[in-house]
Length: 309
Ligand code: GTP
View 1 (cartoon, rainbow, N blue to C red):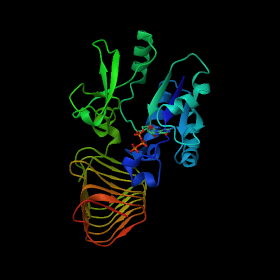
View 2 (view 1 turned 60 degrees about the vertical axis):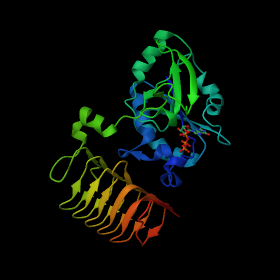
View 3 (view 1 turned 90 degrees about the horizontal axis):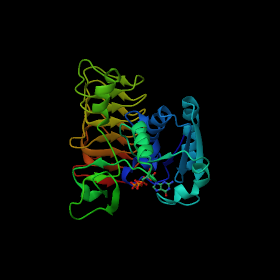
View 4 (view 1 turned 60 degrees about the horizontal axis):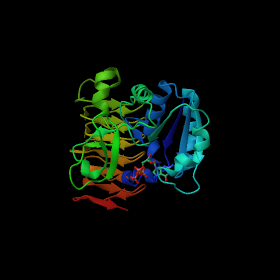
């Protein structure tokens, strides 16, 4: 079977991270988002994955070829000379998709969920209609594209960002990944002194003495936490360094420390703060939310959320 994944977007909502890596390669729970999807597809007997590439196509190709070999899946790169949006790439890849009569999967590259591909395929084959779409319930449908459907699930219409309540299924899905990992593979989560709730730490990360980590923290490969750090609701990406007694808490959302960034001693970082790649936050600063573009060095506190260029 085949699948097509749309991976060509600029990923503007995930800036500053997507200024360094395309969104599908940004790690979610220590693994590029796209690899979560490809692994799940391989488990459903998908043998060929067509990647509809545009933005940073070369980087995508270089980083994925090796992973695909390991997984035993063939990757086909369908190049768009200019971004074709979300329907155009399907037409461009027509020759691959129509090479057989088998149904195929189409995915946005920014969805993480339980990937119920087997059930989806079974459901699709049973109703025998042209297509099947997976939707999810959200609290506030007004921010999304909403699917209006009949009792048996037949789609009536799509409404973009409705002003009044129509239905609360959107065409995207996200489950709380770490909570689900706790249920399915608790052995992958960290435990021990100083660990609170769901915490995922790459085995190559270095953790100092007397750190307090969690809940909802992921620490990437080669990252370093010095002694006495306190990290809550945060993601520390590959090779980042958090120095002694730094305190990070994403509170209602998350703090993200980008690849190879350095957070100084006694820094207090809270709110939704996202440091791009290779950012330096000098010692003893207070950072209260905001986004910091790659390769910046910050030497004064940021008391209100802002974009630092
Ligand atoms: P934002 O800029 O934050 O909206 O992110 P995005 O660029 O990823 O856009 P959006 O979330 O709307 O895209 C949904 C999916 O379509 C993602 O997987 C994108 O990579 C993909 N996508 C968006 N635009 C294009 C495009 O022009 N070509 C291709 N091949 N994929 C696209």
